[in-house]
Length: 341
Length: 288
Image (cartoon, rainbow over all chains, first blue to last red; front, side, top):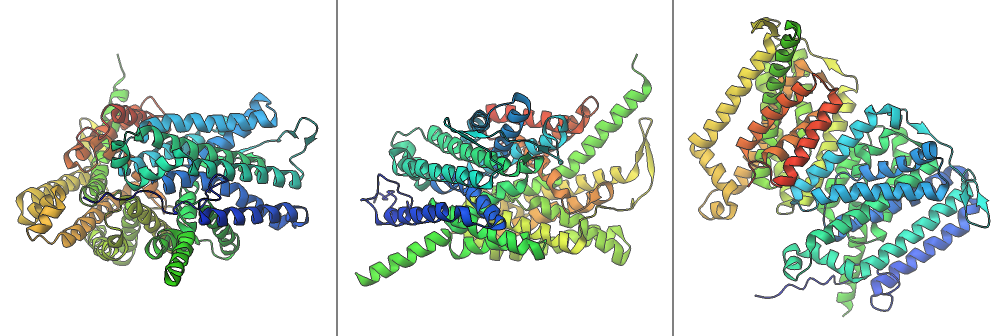
């Protein structure tokens, strides 16, 4: 029997700093990433307020999307309940500032730690299950907490939500008010860069290789002696922590949190982003976020049932190019390369 | 001494929970049946249920007969399900995760289409059989008893179909080992299509039956699908016996708990029970 080669074969776009010399693909995506970052740094001060808020939202959601793709794209676990961690992150910020009077960094830490805890407990139960059970369980978890958030108005404010005054960001030498939109912008940009670097490092590290091997052939990964359960749990927690971070930043941007953070939309959105942009890459989901945000921003203004298009889009993308936009470009490039050779 | 009123309320709630369990059993069986055949969870199942309820309201408006809706609507939805399976889901065959995402897409399309055409305001259907039946000293709405009877008949029909007809044997053979079934000349693609349609018929039937006792609106499927998920997890995905048993037990249990708890607390308690079952039996009570 021929052994199937389960090495990624350039399946990783975000190769990170380590892999610069190894893979052309990662060099390109690293280049794109740096260009985008520099452009963002430069245009920050001159963005008009409306556009600023849109870019801010895209950056925050990109963190969510990249984290989620570790789960869906790298270990092929389709979670339908990441809005739980998004909501937990948001409420982590809101509640710790409101009730504990926490400072900015402490509140953020609490938010991330909370989503870590939730993910750990949920992961222990759900990760070992088969695909279909995993989807159902994650969906059930978020639904139950959504219902709880809606009904426990004394804690969460329910549908009306809770407004909160975000404490200033202290950096040791000075502290900045988050109400200055430029401060908010650079803060989110910092987290976006940090997320990308951390995830790119993880993806190109041995840990990331194991993730990919689980995606390609779970049985063989187990056969080689890897504790598949533990690695799947790690991917689950990792994606949830970034979902929590993203939720926290989203709540900071709005200075507000309500039960809608737990809603089904926030569970489906990361799937749509990853699918559209390209699963199994780090850049892809960000492209998905940009497209979907623009789409939502412009289309929802004149057609309230734009979700129909989202539904059609999901099916069409799955049919036409299961690896999304990035996958499509990559396959075209490979075709061109092999054509030359 | 417990007052008689309390006991009556208790009996009423239990019977009500049991009857609701019969409707849930119909819907969850569809879900479980589809899983048994295709290894996927149909995320649009709750929305098919919702469409069943909404369409029955339309049929009632056009023809003035609820009983006609009970016949026509599941049939129509079953017929719609066939091309859906063939042209939307078939291309993703063998990749459960992808197929499930595709059904999420279908769910979005259904939900938003209903929102656009039917509107977002909940409507109430008039009781098609306004009659009160005295049962253990409790006056009970006749229609709910009727639902129970219809459900039992349909469930028995399914059982007969699966275990007493030759087509049922083909279906069970395909569920057991699809490749082998295909090898001995069973048209497994057609069986797959039939199964998906049958699952849709059951969801729609549940929707029509539930329409007179629920608020009919475009999100009514969410609540039901949540309960169905819990049911199939406890009973074991793909196990028809387990699904039936679990839906009856869970719905009765939830109804019994609402006596002392708020509905949301009862739901959370049921969820906790499910987690416990899952920890000790990862494939549910009757799962394979």
